[in-house]
Image (cartoon, rainbow, N blue to C red; front, side, top):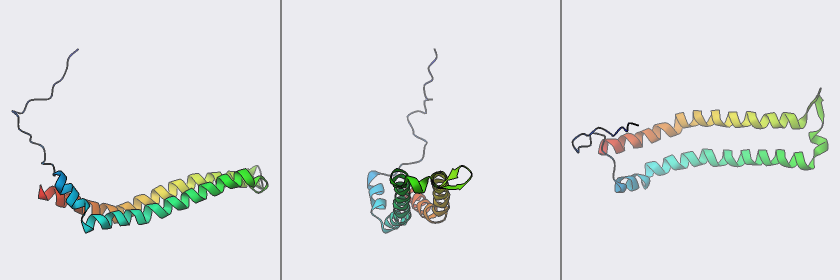
Length: 121
């Protein structure tokens, strides 16, 4: 069995320089990073709470409102089935909405912070 050792480069590191811990802390405490964090939280927290409430409503209705959830809408399709499918649709809709939001609002701010950190090193 052959083992592959990393090639020796004479003790020098040719990779990009890494920011120090102090530089990371400085960026973390900056107003720009705080704004990025607030932007993310103002999107993620309300949507998370709304989705959990929607899911709990579905669970509670399934447990305590069997007559309502069993109401046939057409054929063998009932309210519970439609609500269950809506859970999947909501999940995909939130993921799509988040990807658009991140591309428009979060990624440019994050990229600006990253490029400034890389330029400082």
